[in-house]
Length: 285
Image (tube, rainbow, N blue to C red):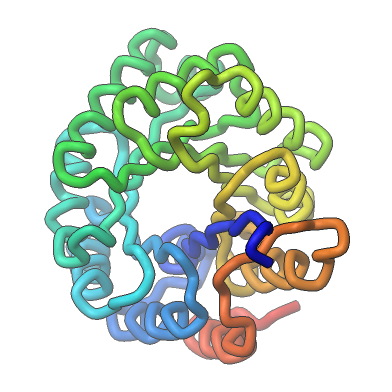
């Protein structure tokens, strides 16, 4: 066991999970879920998107004030206003507070959504990470739509944000597009071609549009990723996210070929699943 690499479990049920149609939760319900995630002993709870609304801000603040075990993350776009608002909510978690900032890096998103040149995107990301790092060393950066990003530019972005102070770099399959072999190669390319990659934890965030979110996450772990972003019952935007219980139990059950461990207390999975289904009304298929 001591020789096994520990995979961090980053739960985003309260943020990406809540973006599932009909899954909105009030602050009290979010605190109940967060408390169950604390029992489950996940490493990180992404509690919300603080600038999205006053309700989201208050939810992140309450979770940061209440939960004592896991790190508490808040999502923000790569701009100063978002980051400041996120830290206003996260500061109550102290050194367990994590600022999670992002910007799109694929050609189609840079051109159609951001209407920004790649150099400007990189400059914006560096500025955002440096600003976040002035609040806390616990900074995560995500390359939105990483799977459809040119590999050379993706590697360039990852290197730049680590230099700027990101201690976790997330590679999301934002639109649920990748297949496992492809995802393995993307992570391997970054491990092999980003000179400072060992200075940050490489994370993955997979969506389930093709039913491959867990498979892609496991492939990423095998290629060197150290954190998996997931949700209880796999709820989330569109077809959902990587399922926490599936990826955790895959790692536990198949240690014969997956020499990894994680800190999750698996006896609390069932209660977490039932609680979320009760609160959201979305039952497990």
